[in-house]
Amino acid sequence: MSIETRSMHITPVGGNVFADLGFEPEEAAALKAESQRIIFEELAIKESLMAELADRIEAKRLK
Image (cartoon, rainbow, N blue to C red; front, top):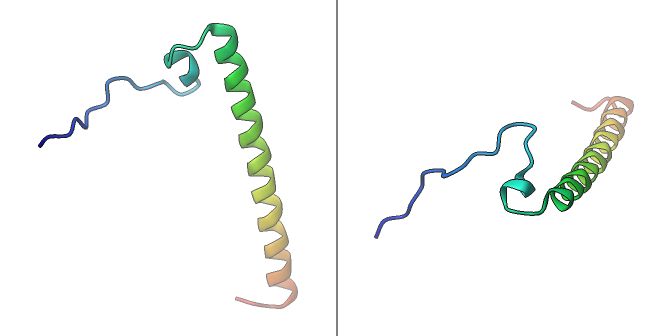
């Protein structure tokens, strides 16, 4: 049994994977914008958590 492992298409950096998947241009743009918003929010939460942890580690003089 053989499994195909080659990539058939690679979306370039800054491209729109939703457009590549066949969504209409308006919907692809909206989906890309929404996914970028979600990623931005999640990264902000992670940064906040890391800052809080760093502050606690420093305050308790942990290594």
